[in-house]
Image (cartoon, rainbow, N blue to C red; front, top):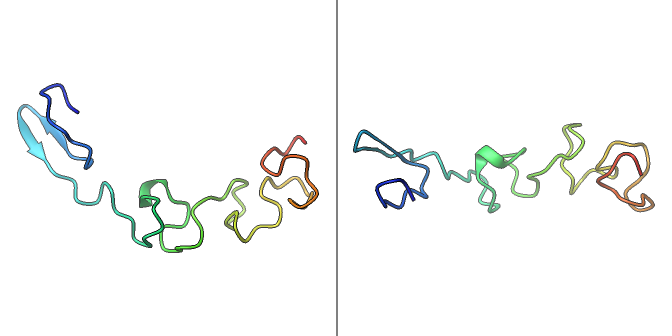
Length: 82
């Protein structure tokens, strides 16, 4: 909600009482429930996160934190120090 009490959860903004609608603010191109601006793979409905930045999404990546230890045996698969 903005300072005028208007609900602008659609990503739009109001400047000097002028409403600016941003149709892409909540765009989810692959319909995976993660908006494109927060999705590491906006066109892949099976991936949205890449914790270690290796270009492989966490669903397909066998080492999510990039520490060289497979997630199946890693004490904390998202913490490279463990």
